[in-house]
Image (tube, rainbow, N blue to C red; front, side, top):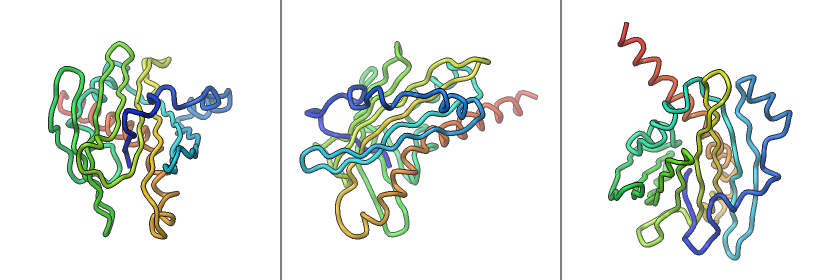
Length: 202
């Protein structure tokens, strides 16, 4: 589940250390089509953050992947458990995206403040704490980069605090797993869209 911290916390790119970078073994797994995930836990004051970073190779050119990442209306297609998404406000490269996620009796709503960085082909996001939010805190980013063979490497990182309680402690591992699988869901969405366009063109 995507969510992000208030502005007083470090920027997303400063929240992940060099230890989170890809190793030689990670690169072999990526080349074999695997999703690579690195978990991270962090305590910041009262916040108990979970998340980490993940990477996936997508079999489309980077311009196609960037177009999908920059299409905020398409986020409902790869954010896990999203049942509703709506752009509440947009000005230039910045936008507020209202998200609703449902899982059985769980109904979570929040607004993401997103910024697209075309020069870096990245999107950073954080929860708008001035509006109603059911997730305590978090922040993150997604980025696409060219990869050999006219493919794309997508990287994702996020740290979130989904709250306390017995039930939350039970679902926390599943939430983190699904959160870090976003590059896989993005790959599945983008490749399906490209395949559909190719079929229509025949």
